[in-house]
Image 1 (cartoon, protein in one colour):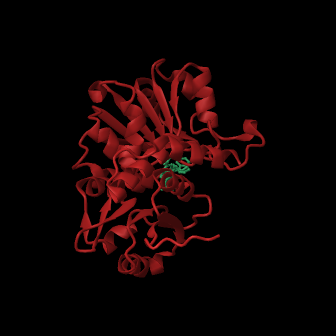
Image 2 (cartoon, helix red, strand yellow):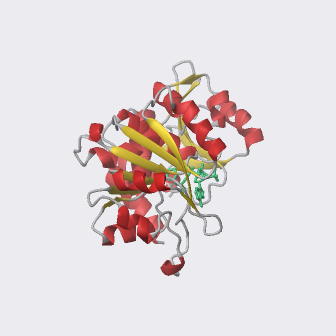
Image 3 (cartoon, helix red, strand yellow):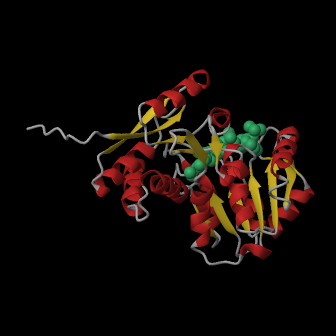
Amino acid sequence: MVVFSSIPTKLVGIIGNPLSHSLSPIMQNAAFASLKLNWLYVALPVTNTSLRHLIRDLSHIDCQGINVTIPHKQNVIQHIAELTPIARQAGAVNTLIKALNGNWIGTNTDVEGFMTPLKTRNINWKTKKAIILGCGGSARAVVTALTRLEFCNIIIAGRNIISLQKFVDTCKEMSPQLEYILWNNDSTHTLETAGFQQVLKEADLIINSTPIGMTKKYDSLKNFKTPLTDLQIDMLKDKAIIYDLIYTPRPTPLLIKAASRGHDCIDGLEMLVQQGAASLRLWTGIQDVPVQVMRNAALSSLCN
Ligand code: NAP
């Protein structure tokens, strides 16, 4: 027997393109089931040209909230009435929440998602140095998080001097401790300055925010790429923490190598789970959201 509820289902969703591999619908719907909420989280693939219309239409149909992912985290900003300070600082939005007047407010829970595993380590970061490999979209949330944790030095490494300078120019006001260095791990075009080696030797936290090492296939691990060579991994301080934003495969080849040398390693799954949990808190007002249920849902989906 089908029982129809008289309470209308509340809608939330994710906009991006492509979305076929997104774990967010699985995590969020598992959380709704656990909380016994009549809410539904859907994937809404959208191109850049339709983005503005979709955002407006979703506010008209009383959508409760939206996650935003690649490639819209930055260009969505122009279509939103208001930004939270953290979204302004990151220059990127991954979550839309409803204002009382029905307008969307853009915020960023990637920053909290990235920070959560670091906070559990109870380290005073004020004297610590970090290096971020890659200067794309996720690096913005990472710089915001490291700035909030008060790292004394943050170096961003990338292969394109123009992108690097632009990145630093847009972050420098909020993150005066941010500097950049040229680096490229392509086998066809190796660019590794002596300065890069020195930065690696001094770093307390190394973050991979490039897609190097990411794959959906678990077949031949020995063919997988790592953003750092074995020699570079050997240069790291014994106590350096390695944080790879990638979560497929899990662990990544970089983390396998770093863990074998005794380093504390963090992969990208917890960031994904924690950013989702933070968005869920904002939409529902429930602080005690079922993080373990969300983690298990993501993990079982990755294993299938
Ligand atoms: P993105 O915007 O495309 O940025 C990627 C960056 O990596 C760019 O700066 C790119 O340089 C650089 N890069 C790529 N290949 C390189 C190479 N061979 N040598 C040097 N630099 C290279 O991507 P993103 O959104 O930041 O995502 C990056 C990774 O983080 C992805 O694997 C994504 O799945 C993961 N991620 C995870 C989470 C999570 O919740 N765990 C959240 C966001 C992202 P160019 O600009 O020159 O191409």
